[in-house]
Image 1 (spheres, rainbow, N blue to C red):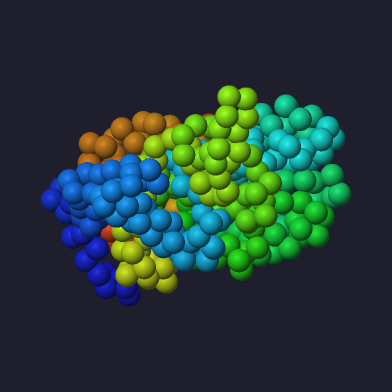
Image 2 (cartoon, rainbow, N blue to C red; image 1 turned 135 degrees about the vertical axis):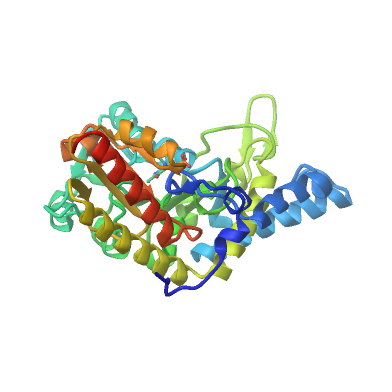
Length: 401
Ligand code: PMP
């Protein structure tokens, strides 16, 4: 079977190209192309200096590269450069918005609206802030075919809703939300929209101006970049209003014994030495992704998911959760615990995740303790799915199912 998007992306990924591993866990973290690994290595070999401090040639060149990375990230998401903050990842970005922004606007009785599909990173920070401020955490639920229920969303918005915090793409069901529609409704009630873009950044276009979202957080490591680097976008006026959560070197304008003033955004949020190698690696990953083309990524996601779905249905005794074809399929083999299944899959060199996928409220809602997740990316092929299905059939036979 031939894919409509012809490529040999796997050859760019050293961990995969010389191994017989079948990596179907890109939703946890993507593999890295050689160019990203080289960019990080080159940084430490020939460019290493601290940014925004070192007033000599090497340091100035590194500062320029770091700021160029910020510019490229800004272009990638259609933001202004001063609206892009480098973080450790999505989790940090969302925690900063909860603590540095939401906490100051929430009053007792206000509401924070999230969905039952949120990753714990976009759930626990809101639960904690709700407890601290006396606000209420309200959930949007799903339609019978396990999609975000826009009617329920609309019904739950009201004048007490101050924050709407939602995923762009679910890490379990794989569905992608219509952020423009969501933002319009949130804003009509005076609420701010905070988006968890951890999964979406690798699979679909991000255009923060088109979405009109107020904050958007994502991680480099899920989109071919290094671990430990991420991005928080915030609208400029909101970043001016938001306070840093961490304080320290380089984010200040002036410090005296008893007082301090801060630089303006984004630098006021980047306290201490930053992950410069990470930012440069992310820049390289974005450039690689642009060359692949997000439309090709989407075409591959669709083909692989459709194929996986039909092959899984063929073997029978499989429960598949959701209907989206964006690179993620979650499922269970009926009557066999997913942790047993992944241990058997591991023997056949298949890397899949089993568990609650950091979405325990969703698992409870689906009335399952856990599930398996196959997540695909540009280096996967139909043959990976064939191997998965063969292995799953063997496991079913072994368990007498
Ligand atoms: N949200 C979603 C939907 C995710 O899939 C993840 C990563 N599993 C996160 C947030 C957290 O991202 P990170 O661990 O990179 O901070």
